[in-house]
Image (cartoon, rainbow, N blue to C red; front, side, top):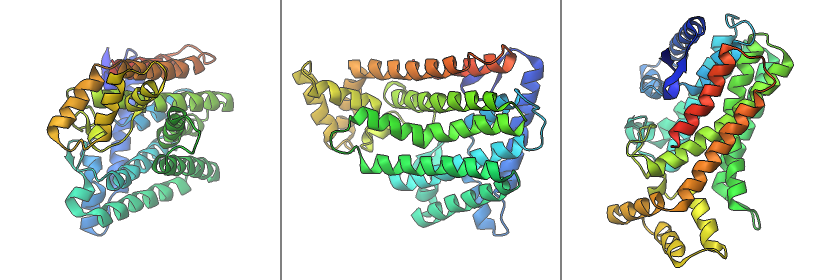
Amino acid sequence: MTVVGPFGLSVRDQALEADVQAGLAAVEEGLLEATKSDVPFITEAAQHLVRAGGKRFRPLLVMLAAQFGDPYSPGVVPSAVVVELTHLATLYHDDVMDEAEVRRGVASANARWGNSVAVLTGDFLFARASHILADLGPEAVRIQAQAFERLVTGQILETAGPRDGRDPIDHYLDVLAGKTGSLVAVACRFGAMMSGAEESTANILTQYGERLGTAFQLADDVLDIASDSHESGKTPGTDLREGIPTLPVLRLRARAESDAGTPEDRALCELLAGDLTDDVRHAEALAGLRAHPALEEARRDTVRYAEEARATLAPLPACTSKAALEGLCDAVVHRAG
């Protein structure tokens, strides 16, 4: 039994393990090649997060989805590079919007070089992804463009907030489907499509990716509150300190506003609405959320999306790649506790 990919995913088939490891190694080389520039400073900035590491969650999904066709097809690795470059580009932009100082355990690009360089570096990565994508055909370009539109729409919806009368939790889940689920879904579709898998298989894997991507982000929400050492390189309660309303906070607010809400619920909401840049207030808020039923409700939401992802795989024939995809559902749930 060997560990590959994020979260210690176990692959019990030697042939599958070899294919996945070789594919991910090729993606890593492709990422370094795609982020080179004739201008050394651009290379340094573009490779900043590549060299910082990361889970390579999306390339892993490309490799596993490609097992349903010919995993050695020439478009598989480039499509995985495209998806990861797109993801990395969004991180540069996200860190500017969030004024984040740390990403993947290193200084964020905006903290190191300023907002302008970070934004332009993200744009550079988008351009390089598009260049690779052009060689994969018009259908791949269309799929990526649609996903990118959804990703940007999700970000705008998050910034704008829910419209009047809209359930904030439903709004938030829509945001996650756009910001995270859309690109994870593309990873699965590209793997299937580039390997020549059946269209019905590609559709199933796309639906799987959308749900798994949402579960993945919900697990991060839970980890931001519950863990002592955040897997993303951020310290616990980072989203809380920055005033980002993740699912546990939204669940708390919904409870406080309901008939079942208690004075303690409302007091915790008031604390969260205050200045959490103060370390004492931040620690109190973090402890309060860790002990509150809202955190367990958010865990259950994570499990629900992971189980929905698993259920979409049911029509696919039993094989080692399907088992690995099911294992990712287990791994996401495990991350959420």
